[in-house]
Image 1 (cartoon, rainbow, N blue to C red):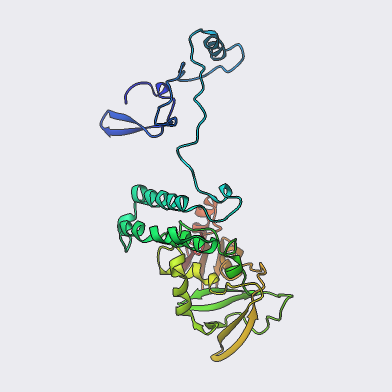
Image 2 (spheres, one colour):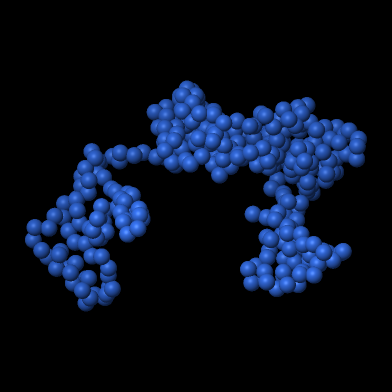
Length: 335
């Protein structure tokens, strides 16, 4: 549209430059009443307000408008909204929405990706196929666990770690996957290692050691365990999948026993631990760079710069100080 944007107060707009001096304003949002009726135009539109005092022109204009006869003060009749957003708080008595609302949620999610995702075309599967496959899944997800897993599986279809579904440690899946042993694990070089062990007062954890490689969990190899969860995690590539899947591999019911097959100093070790669910990890290994200074001089005349701690105001002085070094290490192991 053309003209004063203040005439269009029932929605947001954006100016788009087309070519040279040609520009258009595009209406982005608008409000509608039930039945598709648009809101009536404003009785008064003011482009800018500079004086908001009680005696100022704006307040006086509004007061005069309110006294003017013939101004409509009718209110739209209250009626159910056209849009119902399925969410847990809307269902206080159950964690499973009715079938039609489950489908409604599926359609909302599918439409959002279909019409707004810039990456839909580079998925390794057709987005059209997702809707076809998940209609029966959501129809049959009539208990809290299956519904939780259905939503989690649907979110994994976008293959983007920026889309995720809460955590397995919240209801309703907590009884099945809400607890873990007192150690942290990470994938390093495609192998799963114990990276941190805590002191758990509920059990003796000296049976496991930092840097033990985990080969099996409850008799299953790590590659097999990895595939078990693949359909429930949304990740962009194999590295992010291994980053996110690591913790899930040790999840299970409270106080359940987990059998581990380990490799320690080249020897195979079999042991057992319990899933107590203690929140224990300081992530000392992965947060190594957070404990280092922003710049250090290492042996051999090599400079070290921690990009996670380097402030903009220190860039010039740091580089000047390292100008005569043999090499500079830029540590980018940070967010």
